[in-house]
Amino acid sequence: MKDDIRLDNRKAEGGNRSRGGDFYLPFWSDVKRHISGEVDLAEATDARVRSNRNFRRLYPLLRDGALNLLSAKLRWSNEPVEIVPQSVHGNLRLTDPAGTIRIKDALHARVRGEYVRVVYPYFSEEPALPEEGGRLGLWAMQQALPELDPNDMRIIDILRQTFFSPQTTVLQGNEELIFRENYRSLIGEWERLKQE
Image (tube, rainbow, N blue to C red; front, side, top):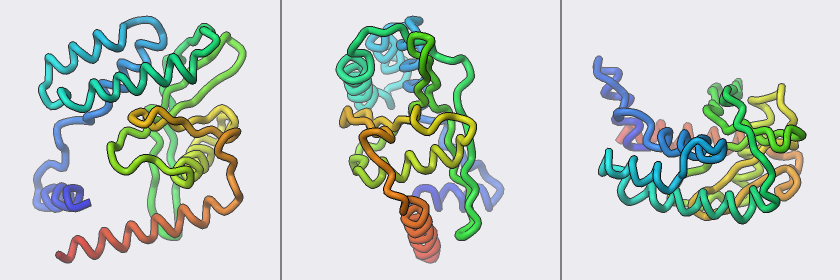
């Protein structure tokens, strides 16, 4: 949070808030291209690491997690998977507390031409995404992407090689309340840190 506050302050002073691009976007793009058969994820990751030393430590870990997830959990039946060219984006607008939660660049795949999966990645090294975090994330996806079937949504914690779905991580009905409480707490912490 402190880094984000520093970036906000830099922008308020007329500077740029950017850190030079999204660290995970190239990797996530390569995952999609790997699933559609355009590239080999291992080779694409090696090329990314050679082109940017900042990727050297984390990208190989992400590659291994993604490949293990794909082989062990998502493609156990070797079904043909087609990546829908248009990524999925949506916004969850909150009024109390006020804010917008963005779902950006979720993987949109059609399997055997019969069913769809909408997959959103969790990349953080720490903490691991807990069960409650998976539930809250699924709830947020369902609210932000109302045009899609909620049963098709998944969140994957790539580094831990785990995934959350409405079938395995059943919503309990209190997600909106918990989400808002957590969001309110984060805003309070943000305001406190800004004063330091």
